[in-house]
Image 1: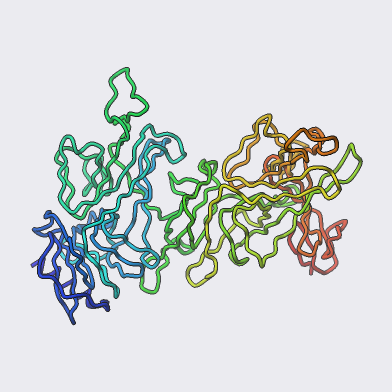
Image 2: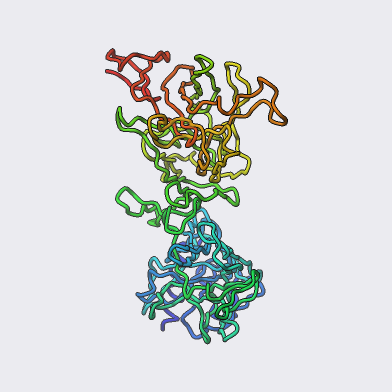
Length: 599
């Protein structure tokens, strides 16, 4: 009765949205997979993972093409919202309809040394933008789709055809040697997420390093965890499991002894591995840079649905500028295009005459092609450096110009940024808005530094250098270096100045600093070709100008941290002339780099 109900349900639902037409249905079955004709020469594959053939091996050596696939499996109340593993012998192309469940792929296996927890991190799969690869393991959880008596289903259709074949199984491995902060875990091997088309029963030897998926909550283990396999544990066909691949001898160290460097300690393997869904940016265990399909929510925190009633996901680059992860080296293994950027760095904006606005340095690994794609920030390029005054009391000033809004922000290029809110917003290309705001993330070890000279004839050049790794200056490397002060320090350093770096000064990733380059860089400099270290300024003033050359604001750059404090009470007219006080006459003026209209 149940099997008849499954077949009837599959045919009814398949017929509702099937447009493509496959070849004639085969008469034979492959383990739990059978086929049924319906409609006008259409064929549905029915996978019954609850029936009598659920543990039979599946071998489809020759491709079978169908119009839709329905997979029936346990859907009891306690597993409806829990993750399960899935291993399918067919590709699901982008745009094909997946009904009854949410699909996820494991993107990494991470270790958090703080709480000594291993986690499998899983990304949601948006079928409008992504696809499923045949013979590749995934995770899924039901969204709806109960047929009867605790049996759930996943439906694949939407005008697509599906080619079933169990050959050519790819292999996916995850490094186990480093934790989420880039420190050693003590293990030297890799993790593999493996699928199977036959039932596997583990014995005393084969269970080593194997983790199966808990199908129920029992004792200290919960449904949806990967749990270390015991003798007699099994994995049914079309499911998946994790296995640790040791790169050396695997065993337990005897008391008082330790392993050789090439060996692995089995005591370091966890009893269970949690699954963390990458539904949000900046989750526990995330690194400085993560790409995720983030669930789109409204202002009240509710999921935003598309026209078909399905949840929406935005492919998002999550860049952490707040937690301990912010000091990790930014590493992007391959170029990627995303809909959205989430950068959680807090920018100082000032709040009054005694807490002036602060500009900052920034370097980004992506292009921003449209001005409308950025909110709450203005970006500036350094033009030159100049000085005036007596030789023994020179005032140094950097000229920076607001970038042309019609031109894109250049990736891997340092900028000075003036934020008018604590967060810079990169608008996302979903929901019909900001359609041109797709971000192409391109990592490069070679950053686009800005080199400029002193317009008043002093020797040497200056470089505005970005970095994607934390830099700490020592007695030698600090020479000629200026960082940006993030906050005021005593009477002589004001937040937003460039100030001379001291020993131990640091520059975090995705920031920039100044470096003086003498004219004699390849040999001992001739007289007059360089400025002595003791003659370089402690602080450098920054002057902001617009595209017409008019002054809009001034500030002071801290040469250690690269942040610039704006002069709060400086007002300029539209020609860039500084005024003695806040104007009272109606008109448009500049204050702190922003246009202000006095009415």
